[in-house]
Length: 406
Picture 1: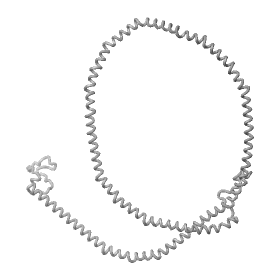
Picture 2 (picture 1 turned 90 degrees about the horizontal axis):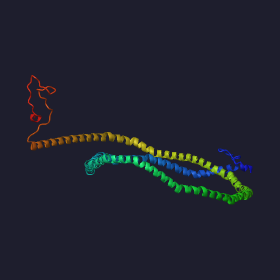
Picture 3 (picture 1 turned 45 degrees about the vertical axis):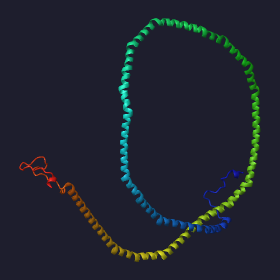
Picture 4 (picture 1 turned 60 degrees about the horizontal axis):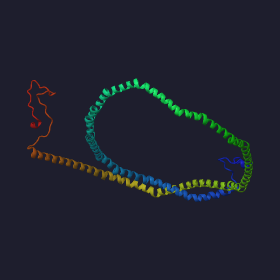
């Protein structure tokens, strides 16, 4: 029982590894062989999936993602930006201007319909009528009639009614006191107070004193005895329950917990630990084997496919590509550029000729004669550089417009 009360007395440290017992030595090698046989295909499949996913990401997903991003930018983002800049922005500005103009119009219309008539009515009708029809007569009536009348009534009250009112008030107070206060005070002092005192003494003598004696002499000792008896019985029940609990706990520990703990410490824990260690070792060994198999397959693929393809590309395709680029593609591109430049020049010359012919025909039909080409204005010879004064030794030149000079 003392060992059971100290569960940490015989426990091993956290990183303690027990020595190799017979059971551990017996199951270690077979378990590692079985786990290696089971884990090796899983590790090889895992390494193959990892290599495949990396190759797919490098050679397929990233180029496809870049191509999709470029297509999205070219087909969606750039058209939307151009649409926003060329259509939606001017449209928004126009709508905002229209909304501002409409708001100003609605505000002016609302003010003209709902505000200005009421303001004019208040300012030119209500205020003059109230001021000159009501307020001014009322002020004049108060100042010239009500104020002198109030002063006269106050003087009459002070000189005549004040002494009479004081006498009447004193008589009224004495009569009310004699009728209502003195009878109530007499009833309270000479009838109700003695009656209440007698009732109080009667209740104390007949009810309160017997009840107090009963509580002090009977109920209190009886309650103390009941509490003591209940305490004794509860102590006995607790002692019996504690003994039964101790017996049941000892029985459970002896019959169930101790065998299970021994089986866990001696059988399950070593087997589980060895299986976990064997799984880690087998995973690492399988990784080495899988990596070696992968290197062997990569070496075979390079020497059977990669090296011949590289040699063909380097010794055959590269010279042929350079020959096609230098001898065929570059002259063709230069010739196409020259042809395009000549075509653009011819189109520009033709457009200029057509534009000039159309302008000359329009002038001949509408104006009535050829109009000279615009040129730089010629300053008159009779003026100075500032064109504000004339030269004293030169006659002023006639001021003729450029159109008439042409």
